Image (cartoon, rainbow over all chains, first blue to last red; front, side, top):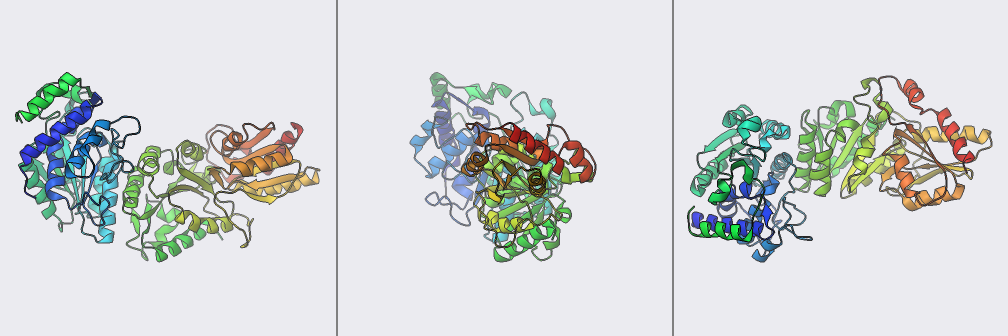
Length: 276
Length: 307
């Protein structure tokens, strides 16, 4: 597929803002920082069929930072998994789009996540299963930088390296902020690339994880690592709240925010104005 | 035959028949048994290492790929240590994962208080969509394992590894969701589980000598409890005693009380009185924790007197 990735990202970003704006509050910061990855994976790289979400042998994406649900939903709807109007039901009673990703409720969601650290292990399990099935699939998974403080992340890191799961590609949304404060203040995870390398992973450091072309280049390099016997971690240096300046300016306060109709309009105007 | 052998043979058969049945260990495969299957099934047996949280979520990820993982460790680590992973990755996501907790309650013996969980059923009983099972002997275990493997969903199996006195013969018609009446009686109903079922039967013999006619019912599945079966058996005699190798809070006693909440009859308990375990051999532990046959006899008479 050949896409104007920057234009696509603007659309996904706008849909994410509208999705969260429909209920007036949500995980804005960490949704907006992950848009470029979702655009690249779902529109350029993954072997998937929106008309057959459970297609055998498909590539999988497990959003271990499950609170990025709205960004994933905006991507899935744009890709044709379900109607865009569903985005306006986010977190309403009875919705199929809950704040955190739920494989039982949403077409296209490959694994339930939300309790941090767990989705990453699930992805390692899925990658092992794919190897056993010999279906050639790649399992992609996204973790947060704050999430990387969970011990379970490093348990799975050891397991994936020990089992030589080179069909597993992880991404760290390294936006440097978590709910309480900057990651470096809460409990620093640096030097992150060194940690993953020490755990036996290939590491690809992407200088601007909000540049879709840099992300695409990294995903293709990660795919080329199949056969290396090592899983790959792509560190995406991103901006929390990327693309909406008043959200970015909130810093660590943008993890979960109220979004009035006026704020939403302001955000949409900026995004559609092409400021990104 | 010891229960460990029964468990390993059943897994052997299940893995031979279905390549999607896999076992995950957290460095207790040798203790619990399946380590002996690793050479035979290299693509179905995996060590997660001493990383129980990871093991539970890996299993859920494999189940998302239609594998049928069995994960195993000691009871405290299979439940309280990984409660959130079991709850979210497995139960909430409705993944088909079987969890084996070995060495329940006092059978942890020389591993002592850190490993002697009297709360494992209690921890998982408040989480929806998990079946909680404990076999009373090797025959029941052998009959239950294939049923559990075929059950689409999460099951927690409390596994005693050693030999238990045989209670059932091969004609036993096992139903995972129905209680099993082992002895008919009219004066009181003893609901027992796991290793305590045999003790309940022994107590019933002593009670008979003293003129008390006890019904003994094996509640192998405490969740979902066979509510109708429990109520019917309780109504038949009008007095109830629960007997379990678990804290009286959260396990069989609690489950039976909940089932009988609207019944007007006494429900006494033999079980651990909300205290931690300690190191020791089983006869000592039974004595200090009030889990002897004599304790069952005494509490049974109390239940009858309360009628």
